[in-house]
Length: 600
Image 1: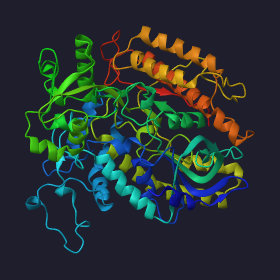
Image 2: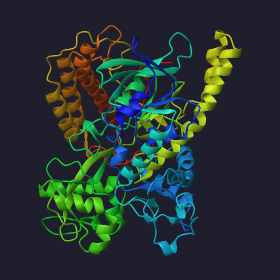
Image 3: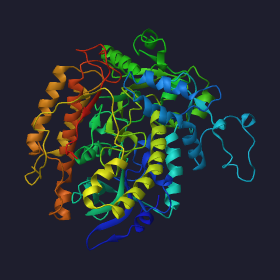
Image 4: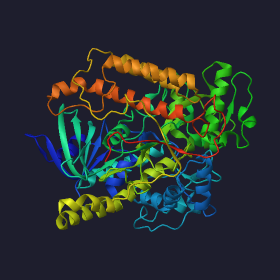
């Protein structure tokens, strides 16, 4: 995209480095752009991207978007498959709400110009010749099947669905006069109106890497769509911007976090050097088979009656067990028994990428191994995107709606981004209008209670509170004593290795305890055991830029502590969380909850 063009639309007061807008969206992935495009054109919207706009997990999504689109499929069946995969931890009402909107969400993407793969021409509905794109219906889309789904219900665009979706939405956003996209702008912390008792979220402190300066964005509402936390692990499918900073900003602002221990590992990342390339689950959906490289045995047949199409947590653990036995670092995924022309047509990106690496998938097996892929937990959020903080919405991987439970069903995540993003866009004008009315008609003494009456915070059923040590439950801190001589690059690499080895597919108390001790030692090296925010009010831009790596690492160490504490206190194995010392399910599934850092 033309980044300079987008940046020029910002009305910034250079003297004060402040920006006034209606809606600030933190994150330019599918959740962020879906929200921005669905909001009324009368609202001024700014979308922040920490790096280039295409550097987001949405862009790299391969498989597709799941919805009940086939005439023989039912929403109830999609819900049932999701609940099974979620292993008792899905929030049933939110799951029903989100999946019931699946067909409308995919139709909306069609109307935005997304080039989905279609069924053969002779099988499609007649088009309006004057405007064929407008006539595109979800019944015309080719559907594939992925693990955990009882039928074909995954709409896709070849094997690069995310890229096609993001390219279409980016073009729409660029053309919208009310939307400004700012790449290379990192949100550091959320702003709350502490002068008023309701303390609404009203913007964010941001660092502009283009001009190496701090900015203050004042907005009437904020949408958090910052993505996941995969880059806390050594092998991850997510781009390097996905370090969980949105989760931490929300927690620090007053939001609860839920189920952080449920990190989903994609079973089939390409196991070649340090590659982060994924081998889409759709290959297994079309008949791909997993084999032991040494014995040639198809091992999933002995693991689950769904074989390679079992839910991801089951397949990932089975592959990890095989790798532990063979000590090769991979297993084989083989699709060479499928027609070559079919593979080249349906998986062009995978075919070409691997061919350039010396692997011809029409004849050769693919070396694969599990890779950190998706965070099923996050900021507690309703199906309409509301969080615990008034004026703060959240959508996408940063959010916990309860749709994914203990294990995300394949291709439900893109659907969640679109549905919740559009739900936010429908609710946000109502919130802004209600605020305006209250402020115009009520005295300040009555404003607080009235605002909470019109902001419905999300609810959780059957939860258990995660107990944190006093060193984590702090209230305030400024990092004036940060150790800028610490080797942040080395510690970051060591943290990734530690999370992979001690907080990976299988865990136990001893490993988790060792990880907590090591993280505490790194925090002491940084002098940041209690660092919760970067104090930028009284620092110049050069100092902030110099301290950013230490602040970012401190926040990652803190988040890693919260994740490990959640895993340590879940004494069972469920979905993506497997404890060798607690291999069985507990009788009652409970959602792990971390109370907010700052109380309302």
